[in-house]
Structures are given as structure tokens and as C-alpha cells.
Amino acid sequence: MAVIADHCPEIQVTVVDLNEQRIAAWNDADLSRLPVYEPGLDAVVGRARGRNLHFSTEVDAAIAAADMVFLAVNTPTKTRGLGAGQASDLRWIEASARQVATAARGHTIVVEKSTLPVRTAETVTAILGAAQADGQGKTFSVLSNPEFLAEGTAIADLESPDRVLIGGEDAGAIEALAGVYGQWVPDERILRTNVWSSELSKLTANAFLAQRISSINAIAALCEATGAAVREVARAIGTDSRIGPKFLQAGPGFGGSCFQKDILNLVYLCRHYGLEEPAAYWEQVVMLNSWQQQRIARLVVRNLFGTVTGKRLAVLGFAFKADTNDTREAPAIRICRDLIEEGATLAIVDPKVEPEQIARDLGCSPGGGAASLSGEGGWVPAASPEEAARGADAVLILTEWGAYRQLDWVAIAAVMRHPAWLFDARAVADAAAARAAGLNVWRVGEG
Ligand code: UGA
Image (tube, rainbow, N blue to C red; front, top):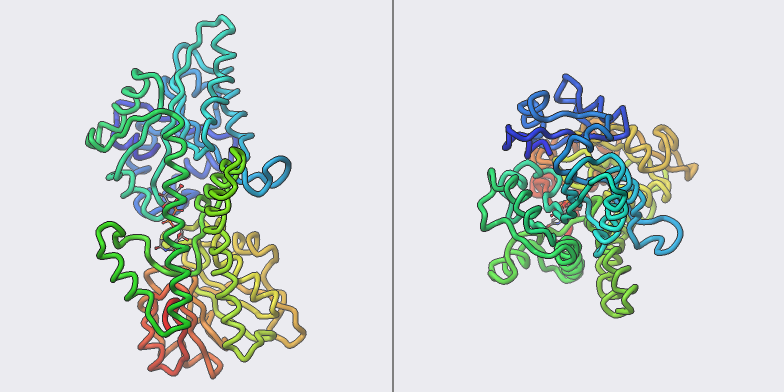
């Protein structure tokens, strides 16, 4: 919405949320304190806020005034009831559709921005249809407009998208939304389709992307076992234009709020339509991802003489990828939990993730498990990689922050307990420098 406001000064954009704290944070005068860390976002908000970008808790008033309403609520995986563990929880989509139905005036175009299972627009349309019939002259058009930006590169992805996808039945509504994006996106990149194809395209795009990561991680494990190098393999296959070079980076498995959720959603849809083999096929992408995370925790333990009890391990990076403060489904969570379970004390540092968030994700506050042989694991926050490494038997790199490419391995090795290890799950560190400084080095995908 900030990017739309930035490019379309004649459109008034109001972002509404029931959560007062969130909205207050978006209105914070200090742009470095916006709730989401995203490179370049502060500048965009700084340009548009107060001009034609507003953040407010007055949801009904904003809906009543709007010609177009974007539904951008979260749709996490259901944790209970029918489809638990796979289907998306649509309660917030339904609640907001009902609120739009009540508060809207005149004709309103309703745009599904949240990632939704196929045919959700039917639900939204049914709810809005009931309001349309109540005689107050309200009318609605429903569009699907899934988002393809990735966190950490969101502003660049929005400024220059590979494509914008708009699904709908009402040509006038489609052109109205295409006109908004058309302010800065070339028309040939604005794809028009029907609602269901649009909804399914979003799930499919994420499933294909995630599948590439599980595929390369499977090959990484084979490389480690056989002495090949996964980055060499990725380079060799990536030059095949049909395969392409992107998204072939082996790592600790994919995290983030989207891939796992969307694939499970796809699995649920397949099962719903009785397609057991396709369901099992996609499910395997998620299973391989969990396997990769567990594999890394296990190999750390194995290399540290089969036990990490009472040992201090430095963990560099907790976010699910670089350039974000988002930790949802971060591979670091699973790996850290497994190591704490094994009795390790982790010293965790991340440039953008607050210790409070790490505590929530790990389900335990810092402090517990002062490195001892009692068997009780725990974690402590650290302010820098050097501080984390002090007295540690190993350094684990779990997020590919740029700063981790330039670590001073001589200084780090000097404060560690030896024999000491570097486990680089993102293959970003200068492995030669770490070896020269006396560390044993494991890098993902290298035999
Ligand atoms: C993903 C998609 O890339 C976006 O196109 C989509 O819009 C978004 O989900 C969404 O559905 O909202 P995002 O989850 O923000 O974006 O981040 P990605 O860059 O896709 O990374 C996902 C995970 O895969 C990260 O943990 C990342 O480290 C990992 N990854 C990515 C790899 O392990 N290797 C790679 O080569 C690429």
C-alpha cells in the first residue's frame, strides 16, 4: 500500500487495522521504528505518509469512503478442527468480508490480497452478495490480486514486478485495478485472468519455488556424502535456461510465513478433491524441508564428539532470511530447539531480531542452562558475533546476513574453546579464512 501511495499521489490510501498498537507504530515519527524491517520501506513511508498514505483504526469509516478495499489479513494454517495442520484458517478473511459488507457505501471493488485457497472468492462474494440484496443500493465486485513480493526485497519487487496478476469476472473492476498498477508497471506485465486461476497461481508459484529449495537441499546432502560441491552443481544446472540460476541456494531449509503454509494448503486441496498422489507429492517438499533442519542439528552434535551438553554454541542469525526481522517458520527455530533439547547453551545474535522475539519462538526465556553438565540446555542473547563466540565450541551461521561474509575469523577463533567448529548452513562465511584461523569447517553441500 505504501508503494501504491508513493506512485499514485492522486489516490488516498488508508491502511486500517483493529490493533491500535500496530497502527501507532506505523504512525511513529521515528521511521526506523516501523513494525516491519524492510530495506527501503522507511523512505517510501516517509514520502507518502500524511500526504496520501494514512494509518488508522477507524475501519468502518475507511471502508465507507473507499472505492476499492484490499483484504490483506493473515491466513495461517489451521491448528484445530477440520483440515487442522493443512487448511488455511479463513476466520479473519470472513470477518473482514462481513465488515466490508456492513460498512461499504455505493459500489466497492473488493480485492483479495491475502493468499487464499482456491475458491475463497466465492465465500467473499456470497457474503457481499447478501449485503447487496439488502436494498441499500450497495454493489460489489470481487477481484483476486495475489502478491508475489519476497521479504527483504519487497520494495524492489514491487517497484519492478515480474508480473502483476489480477483475477476477476468484472472487466470494469479489473481495469480499475490495472489502472492503479499501470501508473508504474508496464501493461504487458499486468496479467488478467479468472479468479480461480489467479488464486491457484499464487499457491502454485510458491510450491514450485519451495520445491526447488527442497530439490537442491536433497542434492546438497548427497554432495556432502560423496565429496561433490552443491554450488558447482547449482552453477552447472543453472546455466540451462530451462532451469535457470535463481533459487538454487542450498541452506538450512526454507522458512517464512508462506511456503510451508501454501504447500500444505495445496495438499489439503488435492486431498479434498480425492487426488491422493498429487497430495503426497507436494507434501514431500515440506517433509524434506523438516528433514534438512533436523539433519543440521544432528550433524552439529555428531561433530562435537556426539554431545553438546554443557557446551556453548554461538548462533549467528535467527531471521528466516537476510534483510528481514521476520522469524516465522525460521529454520533457526527448529535447529536451536533441537540443540537446546540436547543440552547446549546457545548464544544467539541477529542484527534485526529482538531477544523477546527469540524467547517467544523458542518458548523459553534467556538465561536457563548456564553452561553446565547438568543436561539443562538454554540460550542467551549476544550483542555481536564475537561476543557470541566467546568460550563457544562452535559457531553456527543460520541466516545469510551480509555482515557474516566479512567476519574476522582470527579474532573469533582466539576467543573460542578448541577444537572449535564453524557450521555454515548458508555457505556465506569465508571458509578458507576460518580454516586458516584454526577452525574445523562444515559448509552445507560440500563433501
Ligand atoms: C516467498 C516467495 O518468494 C514470494 O514470491 C511470495 O510472494 C512470498 O513467499 C509470499 O507468498 O508472500 P518469502 O517467503 O518472503 O517469499 O522469501 P523467499 O525469498 O522466497 O525465501 C523463503 C525461504 O527460502 C527463506 O528461508 C530462504 O532463505 C529460503 N531460500 C530461498 C533458500 O533456502 N534457498 C534459495 O535459493 C532461496
